[in-house]
Length: 494
Image 1: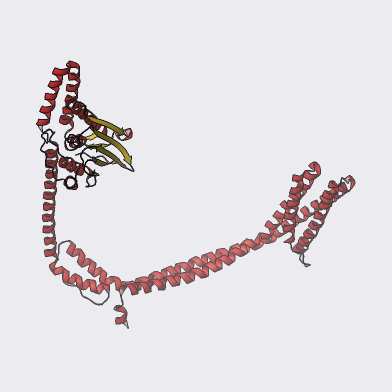
Image 2: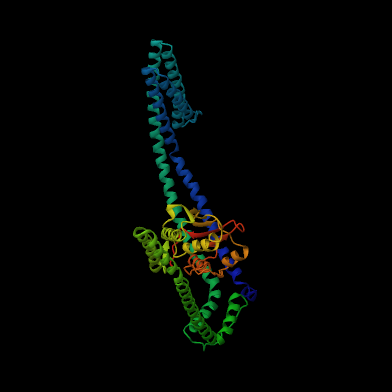
């Protein structure tokens, strides 16, 4: 039997010990609680009669006051108060004992109940006489009711005093008994706790002893001492299983820790190299993508400015040159950092002006902008290359007036920038190449050198997602739509 108990699972052993102790404490608590509740009920009943008499005294006074109030004012409110208070008084009086008894207190209680019934009758007749305008009757009834009111109060006071004296003696006796019971209960609980503690210590000592041995051995291993002897295994419970595993682990643990240390160091070095390479790669990508500016565009626009100077004079040339200066100043100063939507729109305005000077106002440009989104951040040199793509690949190859529409609006927590043109449109192959970030061949050298693949790549780096730019076309001759999606809440630098 002893061996069977030793080989029981640890969970069953601990559960049995816990249940035994808890059941013992529970039974003792139930016994003490029932006894304390009984004594508490007895103590509460001691002064219940006094409380009842006090309520009757207060209630009869309210009836008397309501009667006097009605006799003086004769209002419906005072009459309603009388009926409500008299009913309450009647309910309290009905609870009194009216049995014939030899006890002095019983006889007084029965007298109070009988006088209270007469009192209510007198008060009712007084009210009726007042309502019937019978002055003599309501005066005599009022005097009789007032006398009964005084008698009842005297009896209540006397009965209250007698009951209080009797209850005080009973209360002192019960209080002494309660204190003795409280002391006895505390002693019982102390004995139970002491016994339970001894029982727990006795029953758990056999469980803790092998754990202590295992803890000491583990502490030695933690200090680096792997030359310890294997521990004895005396049971087949969870502690025995752990002890066996510990004995097997001690032999090779030092070699295992060393291997883990070498592996962690190698992994850390590889991770550092990977992060460093990733950082350098992104820096190189950003610098490369933001530095692609074709000087051919600069030369063409400057030539157009010279031609305009010869044709129209200094004022328009000055305006043209100023806008050109702003355009290239933007490229130089903001080409390597994050800008706002408002700054990008200003660049587009300058670019459209330059194009209309060069191509005699053939491009019609309109804007619908939600001004609350102008401070949302985005990479620089994004909108101008898209406009340039609309002009070079769409509008300039069509007949008639070219139209470009810029829309800036909010959609949930996203700022949307849509650029539409009425040009020749794009086929699915071209759209697919742009969506996948592959460059589209550009035979026209009239460009600033920043292609759509460059724009798409920088937008993805900025947003950290591929769903940042949509390109659509309804088919040949139906124009193109470019929509950029920017997070309104977050701000990032590129």
